[in-house]
Length: 432
Ligand SMILES: [Zn+2]
Image (tube, rainbow, N blue to C red; front, side, top):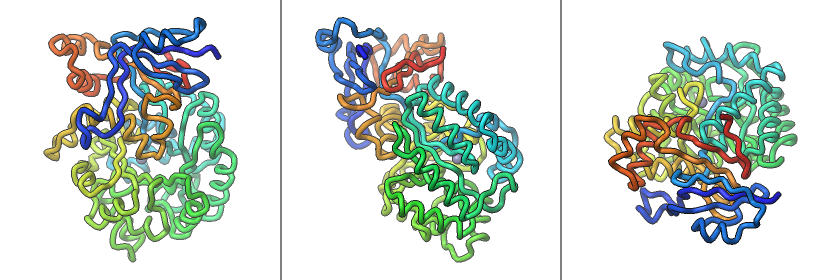
């Protein structure tokens, strides 16, 4: 490996601008990152980094373009690449009518492998380099996903959905088989290269108490593994949870009883939270995943970030494809901004970009290796062009040199066209 130099306007966050203001980020206008063996070796002024670089290093010149850490998606379903954009339903109908039909195809390894290839092409096209991913109930879907992640060298978290009721027979395991299959998948994949595992009870509706107990046992045995599930997305869903678990005072009570809360537990949606649920999320260090395009598309409701910030709940941002309607974290941030606007809240672009990078890395307890451009960090990078489309270039004309304007244009008008290059472990991966 002779190394690589990536030159451009380096932007990286060191803290949340909501708390630290302009001290939260560092911008080097003519900067460079040197990369070797998948890691960031040095970052600084281009003249200094170039002066120390070996003669043989490849130089990728993105002068004028922003270079950021690769974007991170905290909640996405890879088996839903052919569900995205399905018309006319709210959560429970949408699951039955579209999602549960499509997910049954993932019993087949070849189908799973083909979709995994598409999925990674698409994530990298959008500048996303790490994601927290739901597979289907079939172990074959998880094996196909992790095999592709390993081949691509990407840092990924994923897990087999646990579902043993309220679903078609082709999508159900049982408490024991779900437990055994998860143990085997953890043994096979967890900690291999850049891969980690999320114990994944899909949501309380599709798991019996016996299965949730088994999920809790898995979480207790694998304390550093992740837990991911859904919470308080939709009113009909919440009513169903209360019918299935009559002893539970709240939806979150169900997960709490089985030991599924904690600093590595990611709860998708968290829209219709009761006060006691907000308190329990905060106290346990659990993470609320904000999925704005999905929440709007399925008519689920508006996420209240201010309430969660105030209570000290850790928040992540996510696409939730295929309930979500875009793989782009930029487009997701744009919809997030609009959702917060509807709730009378603001979301400056610097905070949104912090969230897509270091903020989500912190939410996933990975901020010691991804989410920032610092020596020793993994070399996952995205190069963004705020002039990628005519309307963007036109909009930028009167605001050249203003970082906050530029970031806001990127998130409001940007998509995969604005992603000039994506690097995973120092290698170019954007399919052009
Ligand atoms: Zn989801």
